[in-house]
Image 1: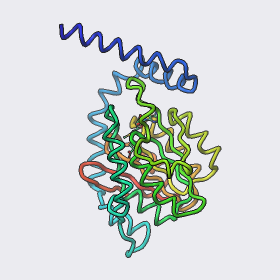
Image 2 (image 1 turned 60 degrees about the vertical axis):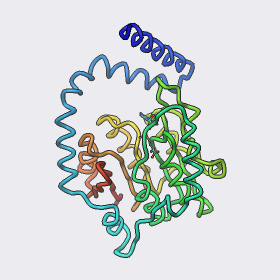
Image 3 (image 1 turned 180 degrees about the vertical axis):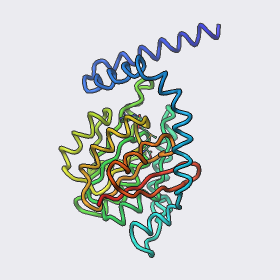
Image 4 (image 1 turned 30 degrees about the horizontal axis):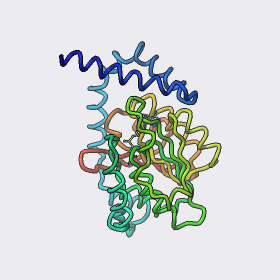
Length: 270
Ligand SMILES: C[S@@+](CC[C@H](N)C(=O)[O-])C[C@H]1O[C@@H](n2cnc3c(N)ncnc32)[C@H](O)[C@@H]1O
């Protein structure tokens, strides 16, 4: 019986995928996923464990606290700003909105570091990949609202099997949406569109496709659109060595921040 049920659930999931066929902007992502499943998945899974070990030990050997990283990027007096405590009302409202969401989505990144970087850079134009509930979007928008030209461009591919489109960004209040442009598609389609719209970014926060190939492709693309002294911050860099390899390729020294059990990478464009 359990087997019959799981087969039934599988069929429902597949049927949900099919509904996205009506969205041509998602077709390239379907193609990439199919190609990956057919030709690379098995090999990749074998490599994954050793890649993770290699990346984690590289991260651990360089790990700094968020406070230390900020003082290197700003100066020795730059404080780490606790965004939830700075905006308790906005976060309480966002918690309530997220609690009403029937689907479990990806969790928040290092919001204090992200908010503090927006403040140190006095960022006006920010790009983020990966929204889910929208905690990172909220943190960025709360900083951008202080500056008259502040604007956030976000890219998020919905969880295709969950059909969570209507819940993406649920933590962002209506009052901040005037500064927000959300591209509901994969990074590889969304990044060129966001770059065309904004031309240049002060800060990029990467928290979407965690595969090695996905990271390398989007890191390269968004790096070219960062201004000089702009910052690329990437979440979960302990998953695989893409952030390390990208920084080596770009010839930049990066910082690694340890936040709980996760690592974030921060690279400043020369
Ligand atoms: C960890 S969550 C983002 C969390 C968010 N940054 C926050 O702090 O609240 C990752 C999100 O990236 C999206 N995603 C996964 N692969 C993607 C891709 N190739 N392009 C764009 N978004 C993707 C997922 O659907 C999910 O919504």
